[in-house]
Structures are given as structure tokens and as C-alpha cells.
Amino acid sequence: MARLTKPCHAVLPSAGMGVRLGGDQPKQFRHLAGKPMLLYALDAFFACPKVNSVWIGMSPGSNSLIHDLKSRYPHPVKRFEFLETGGPTRQQTVLNTLAAMLDLGVDPQDWVLVHDAARPGITPELIARLITLVKAQEQTESHHQTLQSGGLLAMPVADTMKETTHDAMRAKTTIDRSHLWQAQTPQMFPLKVLHDALSQAIEAGANITDEASAIERLGGQPLLVEGATRNFKVTHPADWELMELVLSERR
Image 1: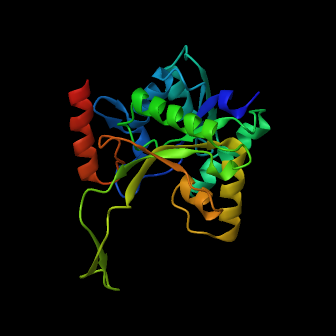
Image 2: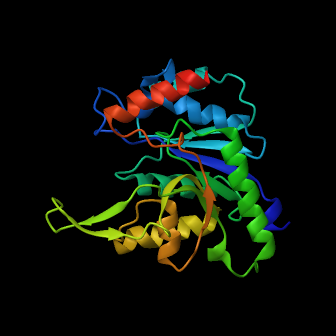
């Protein structure tokens, strides 16, 4: 069976603490506009018919949180797995979760869509668009170009971009923004391709800040699929307040 027809699995690394946001518990489990923030992403992936399963990488010892989340989905519409695969960094958590999926028999050629739990503005429509366009790209390319496979949601940069002086206190020059995009998630790649790219990057101590950067490090050129402004990452208190408005308006 060709990779084009392979299933798609959502992967949500959820082991971080969200220290920049503050609070007494990880931000993905804090209530945002009426429910834990993680549930917005879960609902979106469950509602997308192109996604076959959802996998969540949790910190070891998260039994009570896992029980609480499972109780909110007593009859999930698709395969729904919690794995205690949290590591010291987000990248390690993703790698651990992918390794566990391989150990549990997920096909190495299946697609995985890694999504930040702190992006609750994701929608089923955005997820479906990414899957459709990445698979369409795959149809037009050689199956030997494995590192060309995959893509990510992103937004063209709209603001004027400045490079700073060494002390980051003054503007040094203006950067041409015509080729700049701001990465979002999900980011979609074949399971084994992404696993190996992350493993090599972490072993080399490379500075990788998302899944695409691990692929790019090996010469890949992931497809950029336009996302949406609402799919921003909740990092600081001001982000939290803005996302509450976005989600409340949608509801």
C-alpha cells in the first residue's frame, strides 16, 4: 500500500510546564474559556475525519491527569492513547512518543501530525487542509525523495522585521520579509523519517525548535501550508487573555 493511503496520527507532546505563563500547573491542563486548554486541540483532531488516531505524550507519573482526561472522552470516536513519554525537552518528548508508537506497531510509513497543546485555536478545517495538500504534494514527487515529504502550517510574516545589535537593544538592519514565514503546528511527516531526523539532531546537539527544523537539517524542504492567525501559541499571560476572547467568540 502506497504511503499516500497510509493513516494519519496526531501527536500532542504535553509534558511541558509552561513556566513563562506562570500558574501552579502545566498550562495545557489549566482551564481556558471553560475547559482545559489541551481539550480544544483534542476536539479538533477528533472532529477531523482525515485523522485516524490521537497520541498524547505525558510526563511520567501523570496518572491522575490521564484519568481525568480519559473521563472526558468515555467513548472516543477514534483510537486515543496516553503515553508517559515526557522528556526534559519538547523535542525529546516527541522523539520518545514516536519511538513508543513504533514499538506498539504503528507503521513506520504512516503520517504523524505533531501539534503544540498550547495552540488551542487549531480547527478541523486547518488540519484537513494540511493533510490534503501534503498528500497532494506527495503524489507529484518521487517516492525516493523521502525528505521532501511532509509540511507544516505557517503564516507569511506581515510585520517589518529587524535584526538587532549584539546586545539586542537597537535595530541594526531591516530584514526582507518576502521569504519569511512564521511556523505553526501541526507539522506533518512520515513517522520513521521524523523519528530518525529528531534522533540525529538531538544526538548532535543541534538547535532544533520544531519538527521541520530537524527535517531541514538533513536537507529536506517541507511544504508551507497557510494556517490562520487564530492558531497562535499561548506562551505569555497576554496570549492567554487574547485566546480566551478568540475561543469565547467561537463558542
